[in-house]
Length: 152
View (cartoon, rainbow, N blue to C red):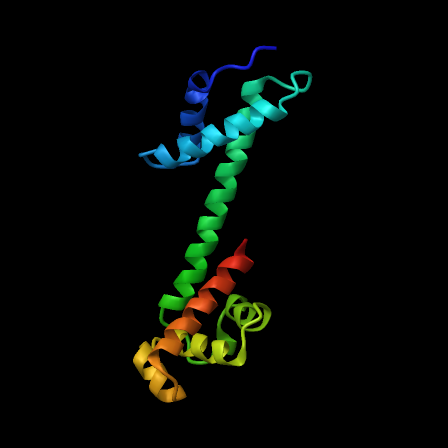
């Protein structure tokens, strides 16, 4: 069975991008699609489905994964930059408790996370904890990395 060229498959890509509500420009997604296309060419079995069906399925799976990961990143980063809803973290949604207890944060990371969550500036956190500002910055960066790694 003949495999269509990438250009012949582009109309399916645009339809998928619109289906998922992705706004133009599509350049990055088309570049991803190009790599997915070549991967599909290598693994395609003509006895199972049409090539375009297989390719679109793989591309849409990629889009779903991308959108899910972006949503998780926004949720995680929002927690670090938004003010608390209530005074006591125990009254917060389970997400806050999950971050504090299940993301392998060190005691210092937990304290800095809570102070940042309460809206304190980094300079005040450094003064309160009697550590340098660069330590606070580095620790916040480590927290973000841990949260993003666990989100995947």
